[in-house]
Image (cartoon, rainbow, N blue to C red):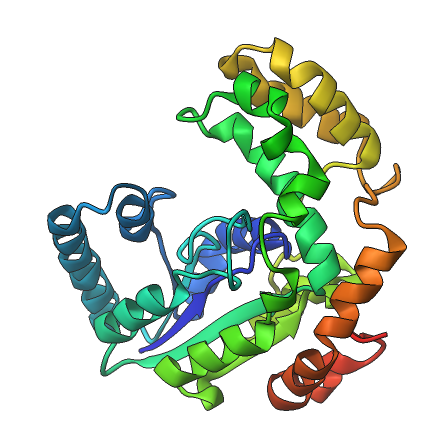
Length: 309
């Protein structure tokens, strides 16, 4: 079996791709492609949250048995989750996805003997930083363990400039993460694409994703499905105003209503970085982004896309 492991990143239309997979599940199974279903609160989520090693070992064994069953029954399977590496929140990080090495090591162990392909989407660092901050706010609606009213009233948590100063933006190297993936699975088994290829259209974006796995003719790549779009500037402003006044049970409906009322496809997206900050981030990553594209990004995906000034 060839196991395709789609690891995100966050804010690269992962929800869109996952819902297209679900929508086409029967058609994909008829082509010998199964979807490995896992809970949102998976074994790594639990371990990264509570550090309960004994519980983690039990969950790892269960997950390993599940993967072995798929290996026996299917010629191809896909596992997709943007949260295996942890959250998108960059607060306090010294590198992008600091827990990735532990996760990659475990995944490599559990899938030993299988043919593996890692699928990962990158996003230009300045845009990723802005999107990660917006996602920090949006995910309050699904984080029952967080006191949303207190956090939104806390300038050290909800202010973008404070957020930006809480991590080293110069250390957010996709090249470094790609090299770490390659060290566990081999560079020849990495499929790394820029999120910005979505400019070609959602249907093309989905087709490019699935074409790495199977033939795409006859699949429905433009279904009416939920997409977890990032807030527009209007939606973000309204969320920051209204969310502290809401009970937690009402936060999700508020978020969905604002995304529908002020969609980022019509209303302007938030501009959180200054021109100077954006310029400094892109200059800091110029060399590593250049090498990333030369080493890991297919020539067809480089067309009209640049992560440099």
